[in-house]
Length: 433
Ligand code: CMC
View 1 (cartoon, rainbow, N blue to C red):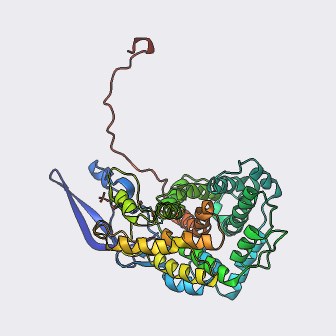
View 2: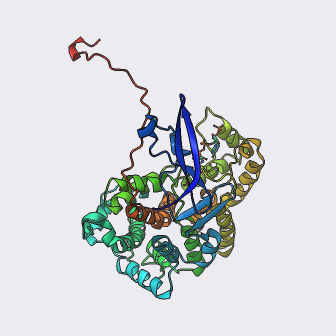
View 3: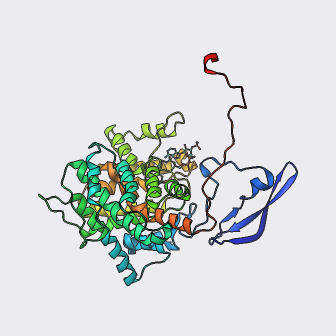
């Protein structure tokens, strides 16, 4: 990918030797020191645990400004996309670099509809998971298995990318809903192409022979919004995983499966489930906020307030703001009164005034209110992170696609500073004490 080299350089002085490093500039003025030749020239690597200060790639997909709370997909403000688009439109935007016109959207939807079923043989897989199996593990396994049923047709994965990506976008819904139905012991509900992307998913989840599900437009609109808000977030943990695994040359399904696994963690996508567990615990403990806030501040206690803090945002997460409003609206429409929502409001108010959280710029993130919406529309807690995966999928695919199209791509392979033993003599087994 070509980028603008500035006329500025950085000088690095190591033991009297000066190394001149190029500075590159992104579209929005963000600057980076290019250290890619530093090892070769100086013998030194850089060390940055957790990649707090390391750019792993250049990208044209998502822009985020963590200090101002700005998030844009392909230049469009997240607030405008969330208010005016369907999730499928946003998926197209991420995958194709621009919003679709009417006929482009129709043919994209046509592909998604065409691929909605999963091979009937795959349905047997669900029978062999225990009923309490995590839907995230099932999702990861099933997505990984897709390659056996839908192999790429050519050696160049980019040849089939439109087919493979719409296949994934469509089938992930069916897999997620089927895993829920199987866990409940209910008959499967097959996809219906007369319904929208989100309507179809909700119907597969909740329709029953004894009680047909009524797809409410307000619920569909809220789900669209949630999925849009999750659709991409540049080089987060799961996306970096998709890129890293993908850089080894594996097929797209395998790379996405790895991304799903990374997302599962409670510090990442798993936080939406952890938030509701945390709120339930606080509720059951007589709303003892003080106790849990003290635990979160205690360095010797691993407990953290789930749904607060972010590696990049040092202000309110713009997605969190939109979700908080959507949460209030949909609970009103559905006439659901959830005590956890009031609890969440109170917790947020206390945290935003607390010196510990203020000093560290810890604000509610995308996961703080999303679980309360999912609860209200009937999604079980252990499927919250699956919902995040459904939303993030177009982002993962577009990042994978971008990486494969970028001539600068190399296999991802960080270095390390070895702190282990110096060479020592080998002792045969019988002589070891
Ligand atoms: N509760 C209490 N303390 C916190 C929290 C929290 N939620 N988050 C950060 N801190 C403290 C942390 O202990 C550290 O304090 P100190 O400087 O005294 O050591 C300081 O704030 C900086 O935290 P960090 O862990 O160095 O920051 P990070 O950028 O490595 O971690 C994070 C970011 C999101 C993993 C972290 O804020 C966290 O664990 N939050 C809770 C889990 C969560 O909500 N995750 C979802 C993130 S948004 C969606 C997504 O990415 O999927």
